[in-house]
Image 1 (cartoon, rainbow, N blue to C red):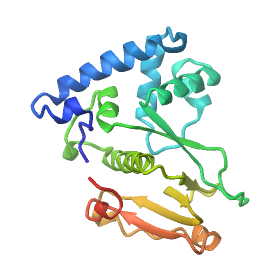
Image 2 (image 1 turned 60 degrees about the horizontal axis):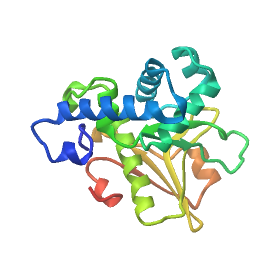
Image 3 (image 1 turned 120 degrees about the vertical axis):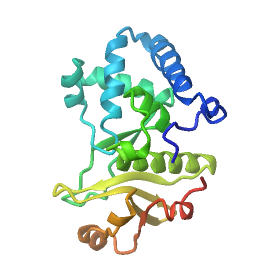
Length: 222
């Protein structure tokens, strides 16, 4: 996982990453996107991106975000839709087969590039000086899996799983009748995670695996 992300200009300029990320985020995020669909509130877009960047890995409520930055829920959703079409962020919705205790209409929002996410919040510190490594690891893997599915023209249905009792799995993928569930843990010492019993009971044929820096290559090519 590269905290500076994978924009080609950044990857090929090893000694100038921070300046390039700032340039990309300033010129692309706050200028080009503002010209789309009549967005004329640069400060609100900036606030929205920062709010989303600080909530990666968590469920996002349009109502709560709107109250935080001073926009209506409908405007928040419209701005998020534009940011998604511009390939800055993407939504991951909750997976459910209509079991009574499963969340059915929730969503999480991730950034396609972790370097841009870090530039948005102005934090390009190294791993040992961060308190959001777990969230970044989750964002990184899910984004790479989504890209991988796109590259191979997969019809996989993706999402996260959560119950009203706050039992959760980071990432669910269903394809050709096969269901796979993943938890993403950066800290290997804390990676002894078991599949929630309620999920195992509801989906006994699903595969479950914990992905750490030690076994990431089993899932994606990096």
